[in-house]
Amino acid sequence: MLALRCTKRLLARLPPSSDNSSPEAPGALGHWYANLLQIQGKPHVLALSERSLLCVVLPAAPYADLLARFPLALEDLLRHLSFPQTLISAELRHYGQICVAPTVSKTAIALLNQYMLGLKADIRWNPRNTLRQREMWLSQYISKVLAFRAPREVALEMLANERA
Image (cartoon, rainbow, N blue to C red):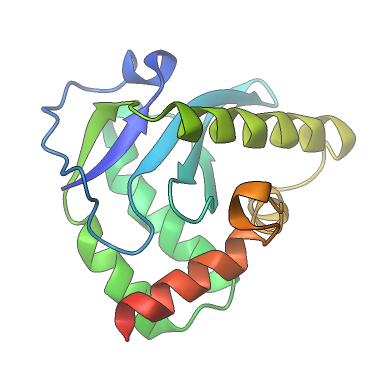
């Protein structure tokens, strides 16, 4: 089962869930790491794919249906990134059941924190940007972990390879 691996701050706000996640996540993008941040005084969630570092940003409230809203937000982002619908559909098949789980990877947490800092800087520099503009910016945020590639291109490659 796919897991949304949450920081303690976010975990405390979500309905309890048994951790039924598998060590090897189904789907190309893997498990997701998530943390809370404030955007214009409202709580939002930054979720980071552990494999591609692609980021989804969505309003946190209402917390009770965050797990139901997350796949829809991911689908919307992938469409805006112009990913082929066949690849999107193939990946989203794995999102029927998502469990909430604590974080387990210090590397993923460090990367999540790096992207959080970048997002906070973008919020400060570009206060009028929409969530979509922020996600698009993050999708191009290169990382040494990705051999200085953008999450967008890594995610597309992973989805295409999974489909092949």
